[in-house]
Length: 249
Image (cartoon, rainbow, N blue to C red):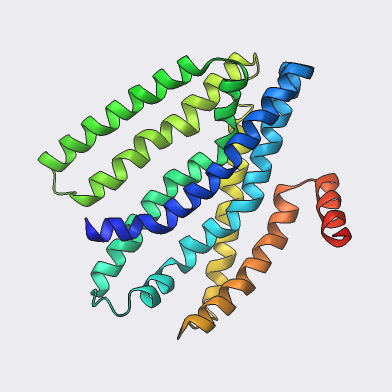
């Protein structure tokens, strides 16, 4: 459980960062819906998903690829064995996957607030949570998964709920096709995979002897990742707007 607690630190930091967008996105969606109706709400939600994908995909790919060197430097004085460090890394990725799912569907949660359909959304999440708790208790008691059952069950059950059922329910309430948000989500996962593969290729030429070399390599990789993300996530007009804003400031 101590290693599980360590594994949660980085993913939960991103979860807290996501919370910053909550009020901003909810108020923006509600304002758009009150002024222009359903179509505007769909476009605004998709736009917000692209923003989140652009901001967070590169750090997520960084954690996946550079997570082990980070843990080795962070916990080098903690006397953890190689197997224990690998266990912490695997647990961290399992927990991170749940955060990634939430990120790529984050603005969809605000759709229910804008439509005043929070009850339906809450019931769905409550049922998923009950299934997650019961499954965890069963797996811990009757299997040898141990701490992986605690971390993994929530990721699987709530991940499926957030990534499939919530987007489909939102699209149904908006009278849109079922895959209107799923397509955006799939694109975000594809971009995450591509950037992770690029990082993995770059990592083969890097060494992580100390914190200086680690951060130098991560900054280099992150710069490449954001340049890729700029073209993979955003369209021509969105890129022009961001570049203009950066240089004008």
